[in-house]
Image (cartoon, rainbow, N blue to C red):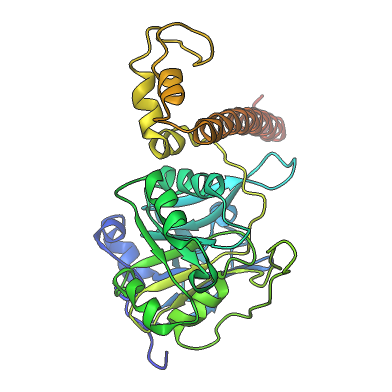
Length: 350
């Protein structure tokens, strides 16, 4: 853009405005984090773009793309504003950390390819994240022009949630992309989630109207893609909205996400309320409404297995993360106690 955007064009709204004091309005600049790199973050405001100096702020480690921040004329971070929504996951691998993905998102495009990569259980995993973050999920099924059983796969995805918006498109066809413009209105922030090679970068390029992202061919033998997006960045769309492409995530582990999983599988959680026993494990107990629904075909065995897997995963990871937070808090208290004793000794008041 040749002209600097207004705050409303960047997604500013009353939720953020009401968090500011009169002094903060006059003493600090308001900006939104639009890029996140290993070396730091880039912020865009009505005054332009700058790299943020985070070295003396307690909020530095909590920053992610989409955050609203206050900073001074020296580009020093003052504070992070409360978020309206937050996408986060358990960090990949065995590391016991929560990884922040993006904040203040209004809609999330869950992108899945209609080739060998098509996977209902993976879509359910992304839906659980979106529901937990309280963000509107929109399913984008790409490479529709190459799919031989399009109607069947569309029906399978729509059955996950009859009220969910599902679009099957060829991302290289501008006319088909026009159905997504309603989500791209001014001030609306969209995030993209999906594994490598499903066409997220091609989708971004189509919505932007030029090649904003590099794209690479997928491996034809297994339909797996190669990572093309290597850092998170928020871009302004010509339609007025903002779009965030995230690096391809092959390993997406859920953290504490019970509400999101329950909402994604609401028909199972509703049936569980009808079981004879309140602590029913839905295995061999008599009067189990869930097992009856599976046997009658009302719920597929695949969907129930997916529900069980995600519930176990989020419970395990959530407990592990909670344990780490408790240990970190106890360690912090010990450090503060030692420092306090040291100060008292130096002053001779201990």
